[in-house]
Image (cartoon, rainbow, N blue to C red; front, side):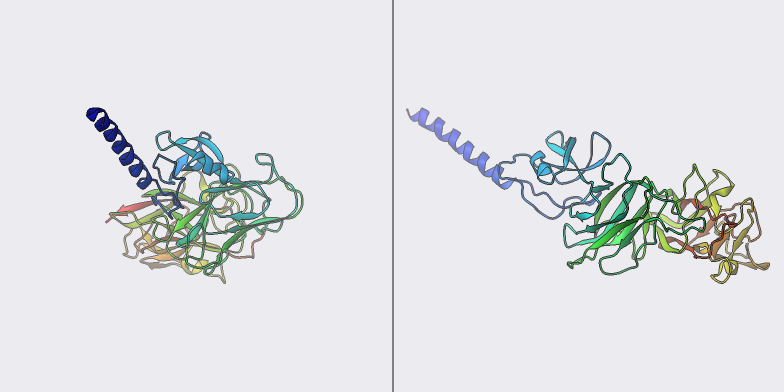
Length: 392
């Protein structure tokens, strides 16, 4: 009997230790964004025995989801699509398929009503981008699908347009229309206050429209948070940047009345950045030139009183050599130039030969400006530029 009682005692002690361990190992699930790890704590049910964070996952349909329990996904009205956390978690895809509403969860897709069919009802859809935690600094919107009415022949978004409005600081985004799949924008979220950013789509007429836009919430400490003033933010030592409404397949009109900054994160070991127009064809840099005209222009020739459509590459030079290699109008040599326009990207004005423009100014930026004085005779297609970071 003594041995039997001892045996039961050992079993009971083991059960007590196991129960205590489970109670103290319950995982906390946090509001999160790509690459940021765990976020604001929110406890699972005490009966959840598996530990895993609310990290990003890829759904069975290759969409961006969030790893959580299936019951939690159901509570958020999400769709379970695949597994995560070594099969113990559910990859939850969150969607809002209404004209307007409130987005309060990270990694939520805004889709047009009836997606993947088109939407042709006129009106205004406004989405409130509510922070899921107080330390959210930015909202990032990735345009997976974005097809609304094209601008006028002068580049004006008069029929349909998206626009983002920051919560507290910064400018509203330019009016965005046309074809913009693959583009993204950042909007200030108003960290540590109750204000919320908004994103709206104004629609007139009965154009067949389609949109699918992923909303990600970016913490103030995240490496994916851009510097202040950046509407777009690219990462990686190489990449491609396109102007709004630029598509490879069709020469759409560049949008007028834009003023924004595209930034590139400086990667470790790199001190300069080089920009060159894509080699796809001759029309990959068309900032205010008539069709078939490919002469370059820079410097004072791109002033608002003159050309007025241009990109800014601060202290840009020919191959990074600051020894009077550039040429500005009317015909003066100069070590560098900031503004670039015309039909070819190069710091040599009056040239039709593309050349890489290198900047040593950090943070790495590309300013984009267009005026409201376009005419139908000007082929303002915009640009498709490739960048490479240059080691120190």
